[in-house]
Image (cartoon, rainbow, N blue to C red):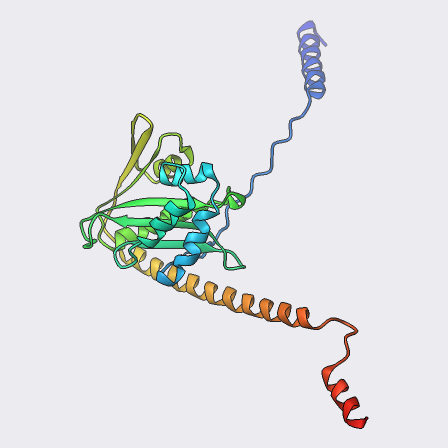
Length: 246
């Protein structure tokens, strides 16, 4: 072995020793977003659950959603004014039929074609990191295209980095004006694919909602039976027969 080989071997050994001495850092596990998230259109019969969802937001989330720390009364006024005939409301329900995420697509006028639409979204804190906000944005964007809307935008606080990231990832041009920012996206025309996809996703979400409603009904029925009957409790029919014999 010549001197150059000896030098190279020594350097390699030193690097290996340094690497083994360096403490390993374990990265936190990242939850992958759900592959299929049933998102359904919400109507007037969902108004109560919408109010319940928004009132469950903490002060920080209310500040991001409305631009100020809205009180319960202010949230109720907002919900009472929702126009389900003009605008579109989308929601994600969990298996307990609790509204865990929702989006409001507000049109600039009653005639959607050639109009613009503003997007607003809220996600409960305990289900963050699952991509629900981005999925709701995609769903609203597809619906807006199919309605003939020309542009879609978000108007949020500049510190709302999560919403601005969603808008930028979709191709929106974001402009900042002090404490507020606006991201605007020009929408291409609808295609056969966007129309068929929206129809399929809506039917899937409706079916998923009915399944969850049936499952909840069964759970409630079982819980009601358990609340009035406990193991070891004598059967009512047995008591009746004993009373007849006596």
